[in-house]
Each structure stands twice: as structure tokens, then as C-alpha cells.
Length: 314
Ligand code: RRO
Image: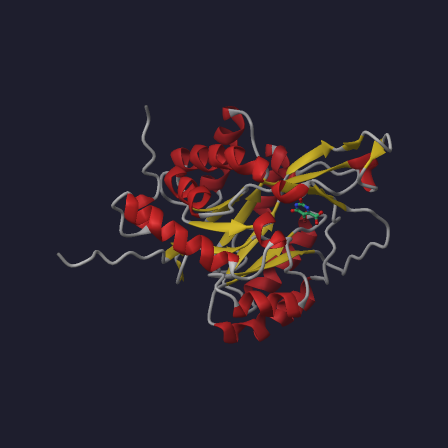
């Protein structure tokens, strides 16, 4: 019998991807050289660092602290080169022939409108609005507040034809999945990215008797393997609520074919890799993709589309 051809090609918000593993915003994707390296790699897309109106750079620190191979805490504080630079970068990244994803993290509704409008006119393919950065002193995450989220989504209506998505914080209660899903459907959001880091964790150095991160008295975003099951829960909860109308990027603890496959079963259309990319090199995308192909084959699926959401219950 002829072998079944297996593919990890996927579609996010109507945009075609040749495979389904790419970088997560925040990790080695701030400078043009970093973005070019992602372009040259087997990452199925190029996701850019979340941008603000102006460049942000901090000299203080420490802003990140590594917890072995499993993950890290960070408070990068939205360091980026400013949205106009990323609009310009997007032109230079076209030659890699893969979707380019802009990320927007404005400090106000007006800032987000300005940036989304600019990206709508640019050469990016998808626009992700990040409503879940935990590391801005004095500001809570918009994604934890339905009223603020709705005001933002209303302002972002009808700014252009490119698909717009939301990068969401981890939610821990069904009521939040319900209210956020309702807004996502009402405001025609095309894709969501689940999940951002777990905000406001506190790592304490017991020997120095102090915090390990400088800003916000040490409160910072937790990244890496600890996110895996929280991300799975969020992906599944949104998959169950979004009526198949919204694509899902799964992110949080993706480090191999198994952690990738379980997110596809939960309902993800594609995967983003943060911590494992930080730790490893640019081969991580193809390594995970090939292992994922093996998992699809093992379970008799020939595509992501076939496997997506096919979680069984005991
Ligand atoms: O730059 C950051 O501190 C940061 C961002 Br924008 C984000 O979305 N999530 C995160 O954990 N850190």
C-alpha cells in the first residue's frame, strides 16, 4: 500500500503556512539580523517583537533570570525599536517567502490604532495585538479587563483588510474564557495567540535573600515548560467556544513533537516556540516539525487539519 503523505502545512486566518512551527514574539526577534535569521530558518513564519510608538531601551537590570533548561522569568519591559522600524523591516523580510507577523503593544488606544493602521498598509501578513504584556509598571494587562478590551477592539474595527489577532494572557477561570470569546467573536478577531507569559510571578534567591529581577520589585513573566498545561487549557477552552471561526496559535512550553501535538489536539492551528528557541538554535523549528509529523503518523492523521481539536475524553 502506498504510504499516506503527511503534511504539517497549515492555515492561520486564511494565510497559508508551509509548516506549523514558528518563533514566539519576544525571543530573538527584535533586530533586523535576528529577524533575518528566523527568515533563513525553517520557522514557518517570522514573528516580530511587540512594538510601541517609540523605541524602548532599558539599561537597568537584571531583567531576565534563567531557571535552568526549563524556563525563565523576564521583565524585558517591551524593549523594541519602534513600530516604524518594523514596518520598514517587513519589506526587507518579504524575500524569505513566508508570512510576516507584526505585534503591536501600544500604551493607549490611540497608539494601537496608529500602529495597526500603519501595519495594515505594510507588507506584513498578520497583525497581532498584544493585550497581555505583564511587565509595564503601573499598568494592568488589558486582556484581564473586558471593558478595556472591548474599548480597544471597537477602536480597531475597520482599519484594513489584513487579519488581526489578539495575544492573550493565561486565563484560569471559565468565566474569563466566556467573556473573552464573546468579544473575540463580536469584533471579528481572526486569530488568537494563547498564551503570553504568566505575569507577576516572584522568584526569590534564598541565599542572597532577595529578588532576582530589578523592575517592579521582582514581579515578572514566567516563560517555558511550566506554561504547557495552562496553555493547553486556554487553547482548548477557546477552541470549544470560538465555533471554528478563529485560528489559534498555541504557545507555552512547546519544546518537541509531543508538546506540539498535544496543542494541536487541544485545538491549535499552528505553534510558536519561545523558551526552546531561546535555549537552542534555529534548527528547533524543523526538529519540532519533524517530530510532530511522527506523532501525526502514529495516530493515523495525515494533516494538522485532520488532527486539530481531536482530543479524546476518558
Ligand atoms: O517585553 C516584555 O517584557 C514582554 C512582553 Br511585550 C510580553 O508580551 N510578554 C512578556 O512576558 N514580556
